[in-house]
Image (cartoon, rainbow, N blue to C red; front, side):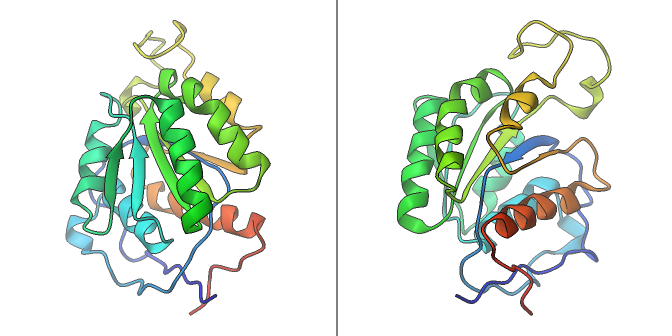
Length: 206
């Protein structure tokens, strides 16, 4: 299998309008895609993630929309190579992505912060237990909300936003929490690369 993931070091996102918390299960790269695919003047965090999903072979993303992921969903919809599939609930999205992963080699799902994450947890844990290449993405609170001690909706009523992250640390091979623009693209790429290495795949083939 010819696998490749290109570097975007010279093409960092210039817009920080998507601050998403991402927790990755095992994922794999399929096929060969040219790394020269981002217009640097219009690069965004959401656009970068969308391009990476297409590059690793994801064509369908199973999702449940909510206010913490709507902007990110807009970026995924704008990517010609991605088809967004709305699901009835988060657990449904997780198992749909599980089945897609089994038949297509790699899959992805996207839900909302905490309430969505706690709902999808069993599906992600099941995929992880079988080393399925499934990427789990969750839209999180605005980066300005971190450290404010405010209690937000979609949480468990505590100002600590790390509960969902702690739950997924034991059922995913890597987790990345994106809170700023400067290292967002590197964190996305690192999550994908580590997931690939867990499967013993070397994604850097030029």
